[in-house]
Length: 159
Image (cartoon, rainbow, N blue to C red; front, side, top):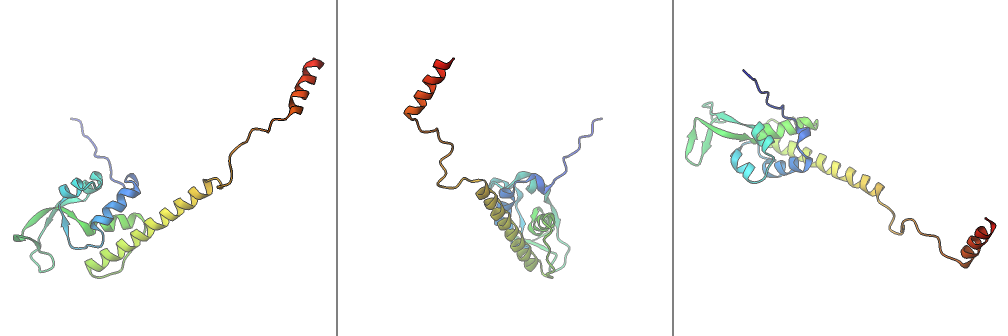
């Protein structure tokens, strides 16, 4: 019997632009259980969405019950946004000490967006450091002069 190991998920394997897209879609929402298939159809990173897709169950309490347009449900399959937001925030060492799920999601999302902006700014500075000055035209061929011909002729005669 061959046992196949599922590759371990890491945010390091998800491009930052795709992390940003996920946060742009679900960030700031600490309550919703998102439809995983619709998130992937929207172009979000499938590996990340699959990693956080699971069956969420109602616990019977007022805050722990799951409601859809059809009312109370015992369980639903999807991506609980706050779990994903917490995971990505942990990857970047971003924390929140909020008590409410919504406030926590908003704080973590703000921290993530600030980190993404810091990364973009640092990248822009690196690119600017590598760029040439506007007035630099690259290496130039030396200007031609008649003395160049004369020097060449003298060298040829001296051989």
